Structures are given as C-alpha cells and as structure tokens.
Image (tube, rainbow, N blue to C red; front, side, top):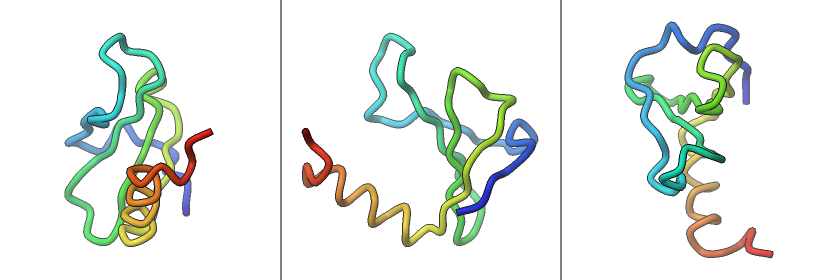
Length: 71
C-alpha cells in the first residue's frame, strides 16, 4: 500500500457501490491504473489517497462480501 499525495489529479473516481446513498461513510476508487487501485475518502477528494495492489484489493473485497469483517 502506498499513499498518493495528490489524488485529485487522477481521473475516473467513482463511489463504491456499497456506500450509502446519503453521502456519509463513502469511499471512492479510481479505475484505469494497471495493477493498482487508488482509494480515497469521498468527503476529502483533495486529501491523500491510498494505492493498493489490485490483487490485494480484490482479496479485501472478497473478504468483505463474505462477511469476514462483520461484527
């Protein structure tokens, strides 16, 4: 995982399909970077973002969807 200091320079940000419709607790991901998935807080689009390896991001999503992190 790396930090992207100026994520607003990236194009193609989209909100997660799992974000609620009220604008709170949303993350955005950017597409189009080979092997990397940039992730940022939608409430802070000019703030830093994290860059995950695509395979790590995929494994995380699989774990979330299977309920691995459910409390």
